[in-house]
Length: 308
Image 1: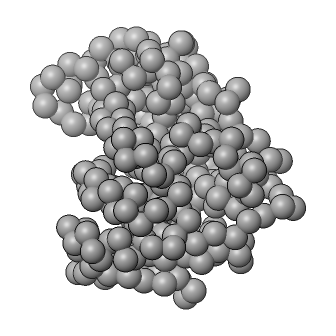
Image 2 (image 1 turned 180 degrees about the vertical axis):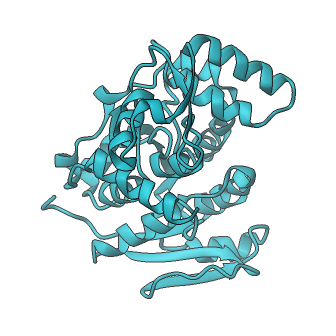
């Protein structure tokens, strides 16, 4: 990516799961001024070269002052803190920040059938609507599918490395997924584009991806990484449609893990938007290298087995 543009970039949540790799990637370009905005009581540690501004998210004067002169505000808050975006978005408008990256980092928010099935996704719409209503900043929504490494380590894909148990979705289709590192590098590369190219994504979604894989692809890669074969595993099998109904029933019974199961079973169903490969921004456009799927899986397996 030969033509780059430096920017002043403020980030909230810059020490979190996706925030840390984003800050690292922004700094690696060597052209951006990065400012981390955090709460007064925060003990988060940031790399050298990051300016840190602490205060209350309820203190509008502090937020506006912290955001003055910034070109971009990146919001990377946890799920339970999504409403903390509201005062930050308002302050960004008052400070005249041209670009806001709200908390999306999810699946394809433009796929109607997927959004009808996964009700949690539409909860993020109001923050983009707030940006639009204020009429100052433009937004870019990040679509990256499930975070591959984060979900893999938590066994959320139905495959438990430690117990050698798997719940496989027979006939499950491929879906896009991204590593946390790829999300950070992709966002940093995107925000390094000159205005002439970045403006193409104004008030729209941008699609990142590390891999287009099925649950079966993940399981097959695990065999090599663990030196096991299918007979070494305790396996349950179910169709994605039946698994989705079971997940909905779990949600109705108050089981929060049902939401995780519903996400992966829905992405594995035909016609539910898990495969957005045709919309993905290419590595060549962003100046990034393709990740090695089997190498990533092997590294995660080794990490998990060392922690037993």
